[in-house]
Image (cartoon, rainbow over all chains, first blue to last red):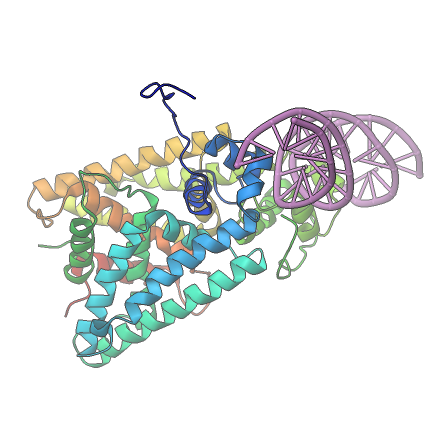
Length: 200
Length: 200
DNA sequence: GTCTATAAATTGATAGAC
DNA sequence: GTCTATCAATTTATAGAC
């Protein structure tokens, strides 16, 4: 038995539960792309061999499915919040827009991976389908707000929805959580820009 | 990538010059992802065998490099236009924003591929570096327009630039050229939305 | 220019020892 | 739980016949 206080400085050996390995995997997927990442890459990033890695996870597609599930679960939870269901459409739209942006920032790695899914495999197709369902939900909200006269009606609603959430999802291209930039501040600035525009 | 959920684009017929094969390759890259596409996939989409395909092109990375070159060439050509070089910063910014959006739409497949580059290989790193140079160019323009008092100064210029071009680049996620939606109309609507916002 | 055949390396995944 | 060793399939790319 080792004397107390002489434990070797474990550099990167937390418990290898499925959850922490998923976190590692998602980070590598986002860096190199899902298809550009091998199981060898993932194992190396976790500090173990490929075989050991397989002992903890079910495979590459299972990792992708778990990550997409987490992102989609967080997004659909917004739809189920009370504030998303009562009140004027424009108010609900602005609320959902802000919450969606916040979730994209706080769950950044998972949502980033979800948004890059191409639909090559059944796992990806399922994720893509659920994502499109959320897109339809937000598009309907915006169209209703326009019909109410509470948002500019001189833009095609479908185009406006895509551009609006296109701006939001572009955050995944560069945003990294850090003390410098609190997610809520970035989310507020983003929603403000899409609502009021660049002109003074 | 083994499991192919859906069918590939219709096989393209001769002549098999490098340019038309590049067009085919870029289309498949955008559908399945660069890393998710094999040379076998490309050859099948072109309607010839893999070996025949290799007779016309130098390899997978060469195809990617050619596509990125085309996209980057079109983008940097905007910077060299007279209207991008003379006049008030805000006017130049709005001009470059519109032209960039137009090019993204007219050169959609090539720009789409460029924007998805992850930097895994030297070819991709070079493309990424040139793309970042263009990003700096537009960021400087917007910052100057803000400093001139011609654009809202209550937003961080770096954030505003990223969100602005994030909205524009999101067009690659869904826009497909067709008689229904002329590129110029979409580009104008996009620039108008980012400048004036969603509110009436 | 196209093909068949195949090389050489990588990949997702498993077997089985310790 | 981790490892070494390995498999079967795939992938980039080439050789060489016609």
